[in-house]
Length: 143
View 1 (cartoon, rainbow, N blue to C red):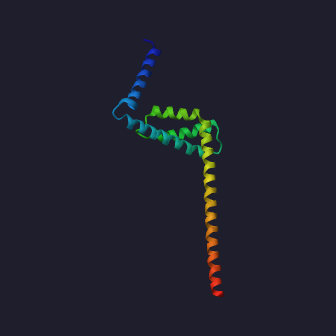
View 2 (view 1 turned 90 degrees about the horizontal axis):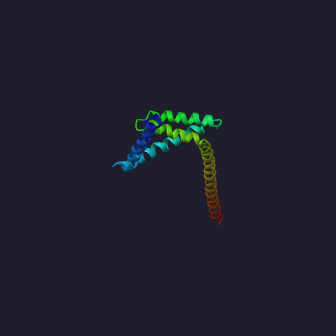
View 3 (view 1 turned 30 degrees about the horizontal axis):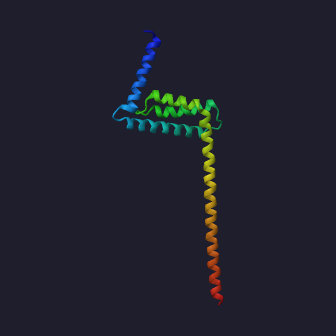
């Protein structure tokens, strides 16, 4: 058996083991939730790192993703191979990460404007009520 065939068999074995772990074992649902949880947390951490960047190009986004991966490498429940695969996928899709990082900033501005408008309306309403009250009191005094 050649080296390529052995590597192919090892890959098939690893895929079968992963399939059993995530879909056929008694705790498969728990395993899937755990994997999804750390993967989601890893992506959020990477986005947090990317948002702090001054210049967003492929190299700087890759450095931010590596920084987030270094944080997750210390977690015992995370498999290093899975972490490396997730980091590679995020690096390959760095434009999407960049777009997501800039898009969330616009949403925050929109929410802030909306909140400010609501506060202004409420203040105007309160001022109108106060003005009416004062006008009514002064009208009663005149009578």
